[in-house]
Image 1 (cartoon, rainbow over the protein chains, first blue to last red):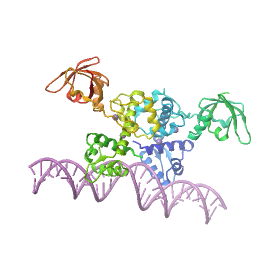
Image 2: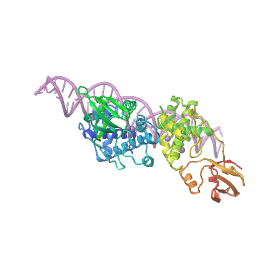
Image 3: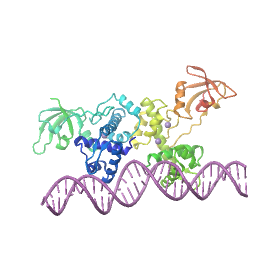
Image 4: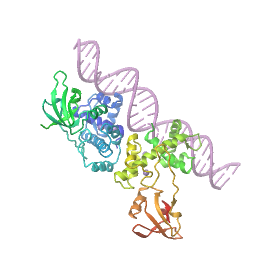
Length: 219
Length: 219
DNA sequence: TTTATTTGTTAGGTTACCCTAACTTTATAT
DNA sequence: ATATAAAGTTAGGGTAACCTAACAAATAAA
Ligand SMILES: [Mn+2]
Ligand SMILES: [Mn+2]
Ligand SMILES: [Mn+2]
Ligand SMILES: [Mn+2]
């Protein structure tokens, strides 16, 4: 049975592998905040368990078994976030830190019950997909708001970052998932967006913010 | 910050100290299922943290700080059991194992929210008292059913054992907390009790069972 | 009171996770 | 192609929990 540290390595490996299946030891270490020798040592353990493929001086890759293990931890994380938000009433900026701990609990019935109480959700409070019991994760290919043209209207579907500061910024701006955003104007020199949504008219969003909002064009 | 192992030692120390404040290393080891040298080593760590008092070859005792720490872990355990039972719908025979893990989460807001959702309960699904935020635990002095006289009627308030097998036995007999039990007859040679409660008439409970039911006389 | 028995301690090991310092290999730049 | 930089490895340590085997101290029995 995987330890907490192991589960955290698998999660990190999974999210890195989505961009590039060839994972470097250095970036994994940076992601987890541990030194390169520590990663080196841990990777050998993961290899022995059959979760990664690894040869000296070569990049690391996840095995199918490793991907499944990782997806199941992500499932537990995201179900927990959903439970904390929808059942317990926490804000989307509070759930990640607590879910980071809950995800390591070993109890199938516990997570199954969460799933059931939530009505088998397919995404978490930040719009990220929840893998199914077999570890299959749907990858939605939303655009970022920064890719949208003037005059178009979109629906906010997910976020690229679940950083607490960012989420609190969105709270302040009264931006939440599902909101319909109309792009009124795009400033050429800094790519800032002037948008309207809900009660808000002509709100300016910086390029940095627009790049983190995942949307779907509705008209 | 205490580790999981540390919290488990504190809980075990707390429950042993209630019967005898002078705790032997051997009984602590037995309770936790670890060897004597392991306990010996851990006790030195607990002493360094100021949670126990300890001198070579002498019995162990909890400091005030240690008692508080322990009670706060017990609080988290019992709140979790209550949450699992009342909010998530688990049976009283299922909650302990899951709570054994949840109790180690580090998040005050999480347990405060549980507490709030439950309406600030004072006892867990097995009738055991939940310590308050300061670690004060009320000790209720219920009698056991085996101490009750023929003809008396009692209310089941708590259990002396939360063993899964025992709880499943109670389920089968349809005995739950709050039920009113009338003692019809006590068999002299084996101390078995013939009782009536709810829909059940003249059910025979062994001495072993009667000794584990904590009750309050109502008439 | 000597002898058992129980209880507690020491010594020496193991695994999982973490570290820094020093070195080697591979990749990049000039 | 050589020098430099980046990436990866080894060596050597550390702490928290666990273990067994062997021994010492305290307690109970004969
Ligand atoms: Mn998260
Ligand atoms: Mn985690
Ligand atoms: Mn319990
Ligand atoms: Mn525990």
